[in-house]
Length: 71
Image 1 (cartoon, one colour):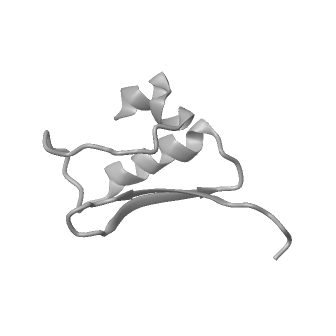
Image 2 (cartoon, one colour):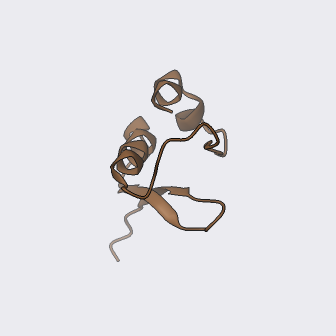
């Protein structure tokens, strides 16, 4: 490779271990996290449920108010 970095954000179903959404970016920005949520909303297998929750590493992207509003 050319020594470039890539950042991967994923949302995995903890029951089935299936990746429901992911986003890859060359930069670690808020878009990395929020675009992953947008991909999740487009996934036909995903239905919003009151039983669903997102567990993260509590990094700044996931605790940021803009991300919290979208969850």
